Length: 327
Image (tube, rainbow, N blue to C red; front, side, top):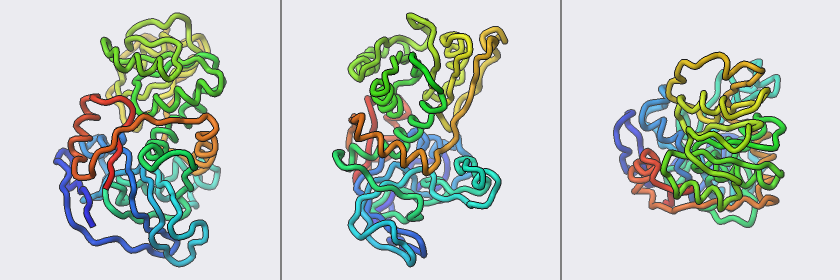
């Protein structure tokens, strides 16, 4: 089968012919129909995340159909459409797993990082970490739900009960969160790079009540803010934008250094919290909610062989919505 391989961080992905994987016990093989290009893939390719299996097939926003099943698989049937997310395996025995926090597992496996992912024609995954994809969305449109949607959903829940929400970095995750927030009666305020009128217009089209530069003050203090852009300098700006007792959620897996900041902008019981990975419960809840919103993703399909170009576009911020690879 054809696959895009990362041989070493900092190197372009390599189009290769590799053996088609065979599912082991409790695994399914999936014929990939679409795989979203996520900023986490960029962090893996650029070496920001330092523990990849090499060579690795990246990709963890995977939509496809079950092509073969290993012994013991009963959740799915041949031909069924499924999604494969970032969380590919947990140990089930560490304190975090036992306490319902499998996203913090001490011995996890992540798709497209330690487990070969979806930048390929076929992939293999643990059946217990795959999910049925709701009807009503095509394969390409569904792919961003598997990480941008799931991490955005978890970030929104970590923000707590709020009426006004700031969203910093209006990319794939933000454009999904904005739709969920509007569905739940939350007013969203979009913060983008200065002068990015295209992103600001896009945010308003998705229901944001205000859109402006990341260093601008919103029209009113916010109850909470989510930072999706991997830019540490946004943390003090978001803290200044939230009210007393407000929460700033860091929704990315990697971020540049947070600069020194005065304690007074954190004082008055403001909270900074990070989001790590996802749980299978997150996936079940969000994939049930998405068609009821309904979430409509904005996607651009790209041939698998052009994965490097897609990553470059993501690196430059040269896109609206999400890019999706199609084998």
